[in-house]
Image 1 (cartoon, rainbow, N blue to C red):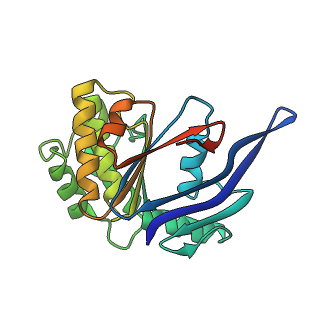
Image 2 (image 1 turned 45 degrees about the horizontal axis):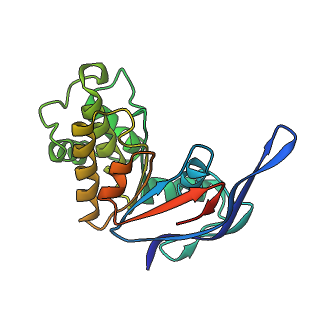
Length: 219
């Protein structure tokens, strides 16, 4: 059973008086525990695909399934619940809160829970090699360390899917390869990873690559 599946998904936008088809009848399935790279030139629909998979955006046509459940038309509050419990996000620019420590940044997705998961956050930072950086602020961390904090944050709620937007985009090659190794390790625990990228190195770590052009899957 796929962790997430899109069937004939189309997404259109109003682009200054004309309709832009960002996704055109896209069908993909991401199996549990797999690493999928999504590649294509700028404007190919990669970001829109990530937003649809992440339940941040709704399709104009087609269906979205998470763990075999049709979530296309669920209410906004239910989409929020699904994102919190099912999907973790890793952003290209990290999106860490500058006044919070590494540990506090990882805890953020759980702050409205009855018991924020500080122990889980500390364990994740230890696993990504930052056990000695728990109290460091983002400006005291390197780019690679910030990205590892972002990965730990994406996992704090035990998601079944991690979505990564250009996970190596701001990193040197050696640091990027370490980040990719850590994302690959996540799949060993049954988590599915979808990475949108321009970086061919990501495809080398992925189980398969999907190529988009003009909103259409071409490979």
